Image (cartoon, rainbow, N blue to C red; front, side):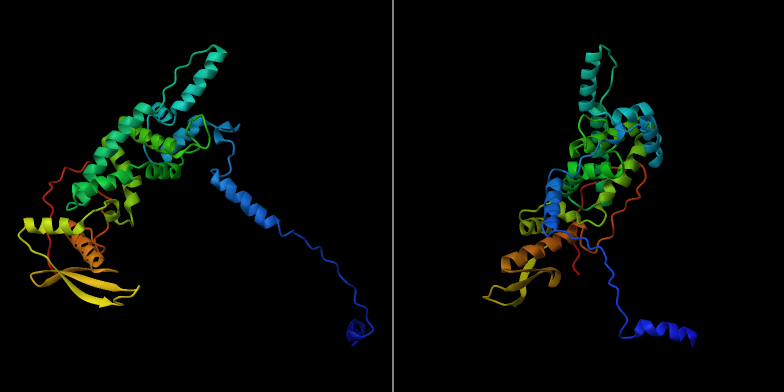
Length: 322
């Protein structure tokens, strides 16, 4: 009861309420749009540029190079790996400094290693793709190889392997060309350090696996799929017949047609399009996927081949009606 009597004044009408002042952070309306615009301009210029890690006091280049090889579980010759990370621009910059100080220290850049690594990658990727895509034409293999050897793909792999901060270059951050060149040089150094088999597994695990989840047909543009399909089938004595099997919205902006391709009265593929010609072309593309074994329901590419694959024969074109 004593406790209740003490609390009564708190709820009485005559009790005075003491206002509590809370700090309010006032931000002008122009702040957020300005920050967004500054961020947009910064990203357009390549992002925020900070000092490279090799300028820090605690930086140890030898330790970083040693750790790089161990992270990848590869045995590199440390001198070759250092050479692989040394860009020509850095060598020129250091030579100019040495002339001013009247000293002469010979340095090797990664040009030679990059050429050797690029040559090895092209040969290995060609053999690997021929092995895992035995029915795909050489033109398609060349398109996939061009994608894997492109500057965008190699620089993406190189950056995610952690080469950006180890590369010795005159400018920072390094561009995609320097990143891709460093990856080629690393592969060239691995060939000399551990042999072709280790380098082949390295290319398989980090470069060829970039095809995971990708449609390999997108890397080869076929100008006239209908002519290609009829040419391939006529060589086998097979005649293909297109038929219009569905249409909707005729004479409207939302018109859609479906064309089926038949062999011996059995449909082998079908395609949709806003015109009959487009639907026929799409049906021919679907049929070519069956011929080449690259349809949407194909098995995933095998990324576990060991050693150097052998060259495959080019007798690849067969089609089965279903």
